[in-house]
Length: 104
Image (cartoon, one colour):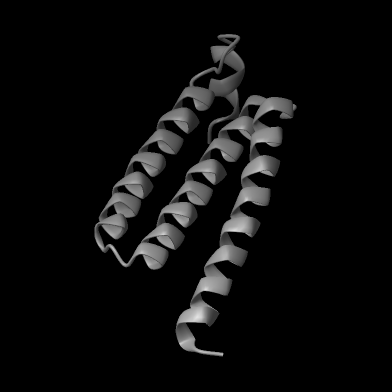
């Protein structure tokens, strides 16, 4: 088996695994019992999207995909920090008194 054929098989396998993980993460976003669970699932969704972009970059050989993946990682990190601050400030129900009592 040549290296190109092996790389092709590996990228197809990786895309399959990423598709399954994408579906499971979307299920967690929709079913998540609490807001922090959904926020964590959205962060995982960004990580899966970065994986998709990386695998597509390997398949195509186009190196610009790496830059797109890095930019998506930075934006995903900032979104997670923003959501965490939102939850710490009181969340959806505006229960700010309880959130301030729990802070160290």
